[in-house]
Length: 436
Image 1 (cartoon, one colour):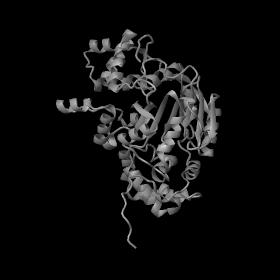
Image 2: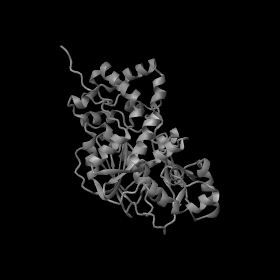
Image 3: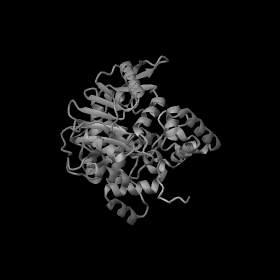
Image 4: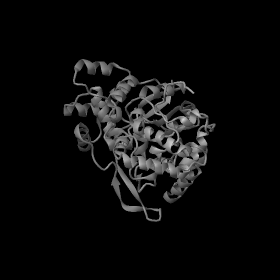
């Protein structure tokens, strides 16, 4: 019998097409492969205000009020530790963590107890079924939406939980990071066809996946941009190789999905995975002056889309801050950076208490504080940081003038990312400048 040709999907969505209960399969999957693995060390800021200030700076907010004094934060799809670590970062917040996997929630509860975290409520629930309504000042959902049957419907639930002036941190898979992983996932579904069923034999699927990698060891290296830890941790390997459902996106597709949910992209979020890959820049530099001028004349989303298309697997993860559309005046990255240059900054206190995991799973203080990040930045960011360390509070534009550094968009973006974000919180804004 002849088959009708239909446009194939880039993604691993056969379960969706077959009408399978994706939530139930994901609950079983993440109960078997608890993700992520336990942290070997946990850092707690000596000065918690560093995290609050850095969050605002990361999102391009120079007012200092990105969160209220006692914010409500929801980690939508918290896995085994994300809600716990969020509660540690924001000790004055009330944090809610939700996950469809009972075992993942139990692991989070155990970790919270071991770390003495008390500002956290954990719920076994699908984010597709929650009824939160404009309740949270900050929502974090990273690596979750893309594993659902209808990502747009899932994101709409997440968006509904966000306060009218709230901030969403969202990550979905970058299509250009996932070609090999999705190919292996589809091969495994043919070799171990029950992978997507309730009660699936995930161990058989992992065996098939490992045999594939044994035959093609180069695939591990090629998957690393989007799937760190795949060679060392079973949970990471399972997430990359046999995850039952995976949607992927380009910047333009993410922007369209967000817009349909009443959200708008604010700025990229610098994350630990891109830091490790040294791929944190969303702004390109072209040697041709006319091309560079044209590139910089594009809207933020268009410019980021060009970067996504040109850099391919070397483009950053699609990890962004979003806000409800119309909640605040929309300020493009160029305006954010112009206001950035007018801010006064001071070198931040980077000291952290370090809690080290013991053989029995408990955590014990190392006995001495340590700065984090450990390494100072390179290049122009290092020169700027050294200047602030030497002179104390100062206006950034004055420092750049004294150092003879340009104030074009790529340079200011590089400095903001490498000096003032949650990944690199070397500088803290000094209150008193109306940054908006």
